[in-house]
Image (cartoon, rainbow, N blue to C red; front, side, top):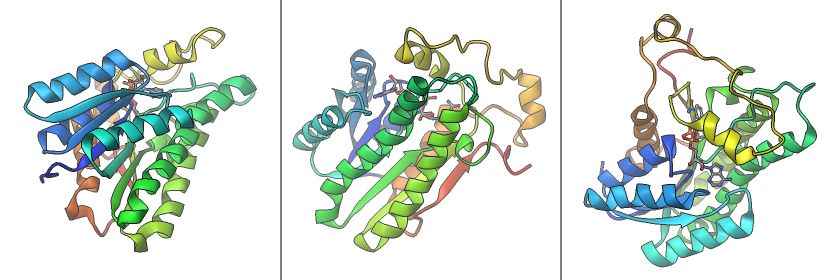
Length: 263
Ligand code: NAD
């Protein structure tokens, strides 16, 4: 699987899943636009790709703000060529708060970052892709986009929204040469919780004691494959959906969870 110099934009690529996805695209010959709120982290990912012989540039943007996101995509296209692959991956946790405990400001912020940013990213990508009648869009959902567990009320609602948006777009743009798919990871060790707490900042309740903190033994009992998922497991699924080989797949929600949800 070689991406032959095609431009792949990956949001939230300064850390975790996005970083792993960006690295794999870089290894496989894509030109990678690394977008993140954290400029230094984005630079570091781009530098690692360049150090391994790949092509990458870093762009700072808050993907929940359309002007910011738009400017980053415009710069990436000017620097690296036509947009072929768009990965809307950036996201935050909501602290696992239920509806009765969550205030409206937290709800709106999480919906903005986890769902509206995907709409903004897809809309901006279509502006590049529709005139060329080709493109691949991959949206990062979660098993929390298919179940009522794995996050709080806003996170679960946002990820269900990402799945719905992905399906609507898949149906709409299939005949225009654009595939739109979602990936639904199980629990993968990253710094998601710490970053979410930092990004949401003051006034957001401490989320450190919330959610599931499963031990290795519990993971082995829960997950049929018998190990924790890794960033690379998700990166390879995203790269597959971006590849020519996946040309007949659209509107799919690809669950990558070691068989957890199949139980
Ligand atoms: P992470 O915190 O390691 O990485 C997320 C990155 O997104 C960070 O670098 C952060 O700075 C960036 N980001 C956050 N808000 C942003 C914004 N508004 N604009 C631009 N960048 C922003 O977390 P991760 O686990 O790699 O999460 C990536 C995605 O995967 C998220 O959408 C998350 O919901 C999803 N996901 C993660 C898991 C998991 O277990 N880690 C499971 C299912 C889904």
